[in-house]
Amino acid sequence: MIIAIDGPAAAGKGTLSRRVAQEYGFHHLDTGLTYRATAKALIDAGLPLDDEALAEGVAREIELADLDREILSAHAIGEAASKIAVMPLVRRALVEAQRAFSVRAPGTVLDGRDIGTVVCPDAPVKLYVTASAEVRARRRFDEITGNGIPADFLEILADIVKRDERDMGRADSPLRPAPDAHLLDTSEMSIEAAFWAAKTIIDAALKH
Ligand code: C5P
Image 1 (tube, rainbow, N blue to C red):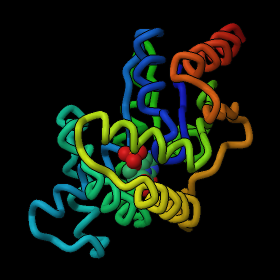
Image 2: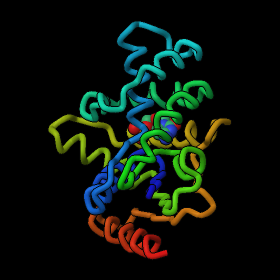
Image 3: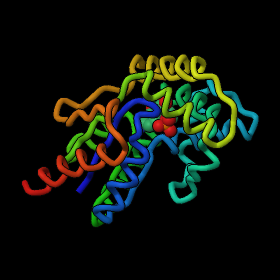
Image 4: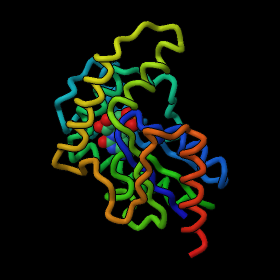
């Protein structure tokens, strides 16, 4: 049983995916962390972010068990991740690891940008979680300032729009809803409401 959850940056799919995995007792993989870990390893080693063969080699060394969300959460790492995520060889290496994870028993929840379209196209449940760029920027802004760190709303909004363009505009595995994905627009929803909406869709799919 595989639950595929895709959507743009800061749409709330991480929180939703963890909640869904907990509800069904499934393993969860935030595939964004695999791109982030690859980017961070390159940066830490002082290597360039534009050498595809080098980045592929680093991607093949990534251990899923070592992914640390806190360490990888920095904004700059997300930006670097979206740059190396345009490279087909990097994607191929990471998708192999993600597919191997997806078949774990009793079931898995994978979230990212291309789970329903490329990584697990046969997943019986696909959700595409989205929200307006303004709402996503506001949530990110509240999260950062809530931690006592000053932030600039317009700068965050511009970053989100730029990241969307990069993720949706790339040639290999662009971000888009799979034709059979259920759309979940959380612009006007709390995380709790989004969870219940997701659960209704998943329970219906599990019955078939
Ligand atoms: O979701 P997160 O912000 O952690 O992802 C970082 C970047 O990794 C994204 O902007 C995207 O470019 C890339 N990514 C991807 N495919 C995925 C997950 C993330 O291209 N399945």
